[in-house]
Length: 219
Length: 240
Image (cartoon, rainbow over all chains, first blue to last red; front, side):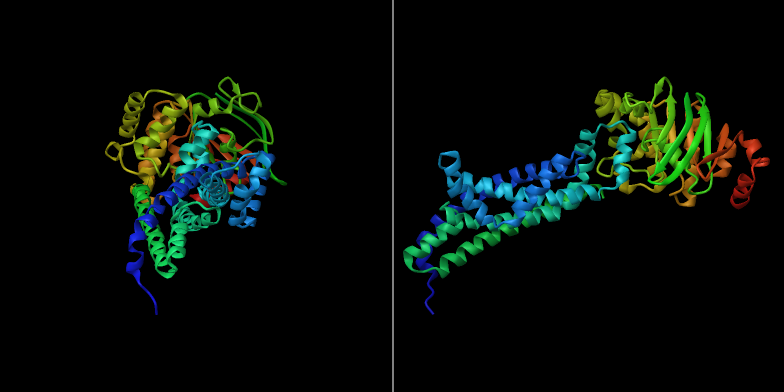
């Protein structure tokens, strides 16, 4: 066995810097995906057929093809069409938010449909217009119910972000790989990267529990 | 105040209301009774267009609410509704439930809405619950909050859809008491109910529906002591 964790000690700060890169991608893509997911979910329950179809086809395509393919199409393929290069950061944010919007929209749609029909009727009976009702009455209740599923989606996003390595974004994963290549030692930096991801996911889980507890205040 | 002309409502091929005509005067309290499946809830829900009538005309005040051009939101502001299962907003406190529509629909100021809301809470005997969430209330308390919530919009008419049917027996009275005192203020009320004693005591008129048809329309004294139709007789025999 040839393991020497001390050998990668000097490279730890370099790998740790990847946390910022990963977080920046995950947070921005998560928020954009969430916002876009809400819009898609509202399209899916809309009475307008065209919106409905758009959202359904969108979801079907983004769930039906590999994320890494979407990432590479945007980073390597899109410049052929738009005529300029996209930085790996923007390509990562774009593909992750577009992809997670598809999953999040399904979660939110299910959450909206699970809200008791009586809530809508009570709001209607008070003369509350449709968009206000969705925003103030239906969505808050839907979000509370789907919070665990949403947290799951964000956790997946955090871990899946490691594939930005293939478009040379300097995230945790890629830095660990570079350190491994430098020193001909892959096991140690990979284990270290794994620990970082794991801790990030644990903290995310913890934050999710806190938010959930806050939302359950009314129970 | 409310005028209903030849109201029909079908769900698919099932015709639930088969041509109902009646009117409710200002300040009148009307109890709508009948066996389950008679269409009484559907009738009530047509009055604020929670159900869209298949045909017929409903006029409330000066508005023909079945006319497509009428702004139904405005009409609903004037027609309060209380549901069997309360339908309080679970993520809002009691006071927020009551002030939500006045704030967001009528656009009155927060202080005014809260002042009015607290007065209404006092009226239904729940002042001390203003900042509780609905999940902490009993069924009877929830229904009283629901009544206060509907009243907060200052409606001209109140619709009650079996307001005590989901309550434990010991909580029925507190809700009926609130409704009784509301009736005494001169509020126009249409109440779908199985509480025969309440209908007899509080209502000015009883509408008896069966099979989607308005079978009887009479003052309670007359209806309960000498119902004209055999269907009403049968129904009362089972109920009393």
